[in-house]
Image (tube, rainbow, N blue to C red):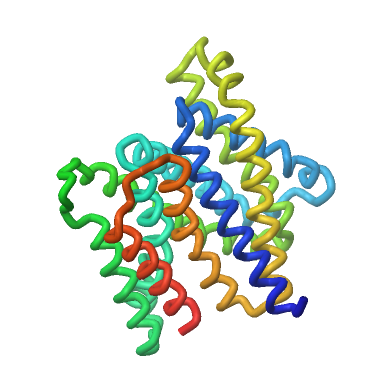
Length: 281
């Protein structure tokens, strides 16, 4: 297998794993406790790096602390979106709006130039996202679900920039990631304990099996992505990561039996295509 094909296979695996964790979150009976269990497992998986590498330097800690706050808002917004809307509605928006928002922010705030191809991809992705929020025949209220999905996407774009800066300041990706998971697991765990009280241990035991699977699969998603970026050109690999939108739509239809229809199927494909064009352009 060539390097390009190996990288593509790894990134497709990463995209599928990411959508699968989204599916498990949607299926969880208590999504707040589930996410707290998942984050604890992720922190435990990366904990050996806490002892194998030096503590991040002082300049990296402002990014770690900011990451705690940003990721907590992301977690709560994601939970609220999944509680209020179908996966095939909120997952594409949560996943797809983040790179689109990041591109718009870079263009407006940082005054970064975009090529005509990138502008075309951004326009296509934006129109597809708007299409998800357009009223449909079901007339099921979805304004709140989409609002939380957009908030989660905004936090994703924000913590992506924050974490990239933090990794650079740390000088060691695994060290930063280990401390990141340790610190970001605390706010969601404290919130779950405060809201569920003495019921948390029993609920956590019920969510433990699903949490172990999600933690393992989420770790694989991260490893696959790192491997793909390490052996293949970054732009096409980053674009291929957006196929998680399509995988999420397929899982929602097949596993959750959510009504998908031609409209949302086309929108999911157009959104993924627009983001691919934006990344590769």
